[in-house]
Image (cartoon, rainbow, N blue to C red; front, side, top):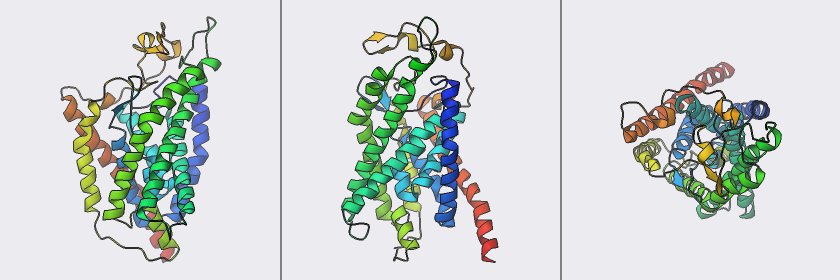
Length: 349
């Protein structure tokens, strides 16, 4: 679902980036107002889960690949506003260090995966919990069921948004001969190509990923959930856990297991390189040309393109990428929390 460089026109990228600005402003304001200051550094753990989830590629219908995102998962742990920030920073790190997703398309990728996915997923979760009688009456099984349904719907709505962004490009931007300048596949191709594999496979993977980690956190660190944060704010009793060791152990296990994501062969739909798109078969026939915007568009040389490193084996480079990504995300959110803690002390005095 990562939209690469030059698949969207510069004007589309500008519009999507501008659309995300008020979302980011709102998310930062709400997190600053509502999330306990001691929880801010832990958002980095949620971002790390998302980063790792996106490294576990799985084969999809049609010979492409996909992955979990974890947007709803982070919303369940820290709230949808924190999830928006966490996934946005994870996507930025992927783009600038690993070339996974475009810099120009950053706003569009954030709109789909950091805005639509967590907010829709969490809204569905809350709706289902309300049907079960609210937090007071909902059991763990109810919450996990709601998490599965919310995450499944969230990622599928996000995939539909990405498909529409891809599909409008040839309708709006083409040359005199009718050849697309950017993404060459219109809505009739892009929507089924993106949504069917997500409905059948990627959505299920997202639900499993979300439920498995959410259940683990609820069992080992029950206070590390947004339901607990809300309950504490309302004056309800919240069980406290003094250690986060199990959560960090789980992160370490996921890091070690990331090479499993290399087993899925093929390229995610809409993420072909300019050198291969002309021969790529979609809708039963090869495209036959390379869109000029893709061929001559802007690109960034990154440190570890596609999670590889020259002279290092593919498996080792993948694990090293996971370690670097997780470490940087945890450090970034730790640094973000420092001025917040300082301001809290000033206000208290």
